[in-house]
Length: 299
Image (cartoon, rainbow, N blue to C red):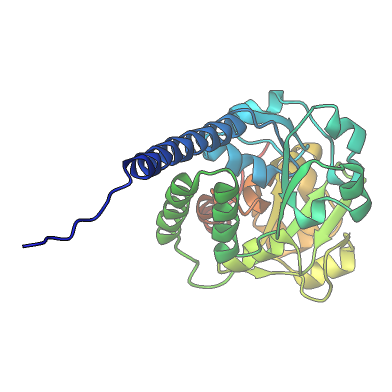
């Protein structure tokens, strides 16, 4: 019986196998090169932070060793105070920033003007929306964590924030709080609506004593007495600039308010109070406790 046979071209078959093997090796090599470049890029990053909250998140993610420049609001953690300063957002210098040889700048959209962005040239920028509530803070943490390839660590920070918020006990009766920004007795500004402090006061279950204007305005004695706050809140630095609680009580009009009569003057660290960062839950708890429990010791 005749059995048909198939002629096999062993040369063609062998060549196909060789090509497949080499293709696999080439793909493997390319994958390793990409992985190495990504790893090398992450470990050679030189980061500049344009605000204190971005700095705090970067450090909480374990990338503090890659920071080469921070702005003046970057006061936490303590170690960042030794990093080169790029100044205040209102006075950033492109030349000063670029002199630090950064590869990446992180900050808020409002930190850099359009002209500043152009002056920074090819520097990689990651700019985010300034958070004003809990969900926006979570989004900011996740966004920065993603851009720094630290998504898992970012989720840990979000979970800790949620845990801190579970322990927040808002006052049963909303307290009327007036925030006073002070740089000595010569510079006294009261917060209206639309400020980070206003948002914090509201999140804490209290009421901003001034509702009839937005942003900050010079302290007006008549308006102060009319607002009649239960509590007066300052930054720690502001209280110190006034010489302590007695300096606050010496401000015209304050002794006529409930806060002045009861000496309900409290203060908090500026970055903690207005940062809307990983410590947001702790900041709200501290604000409620201080506003509810009493006044500072006289100093």
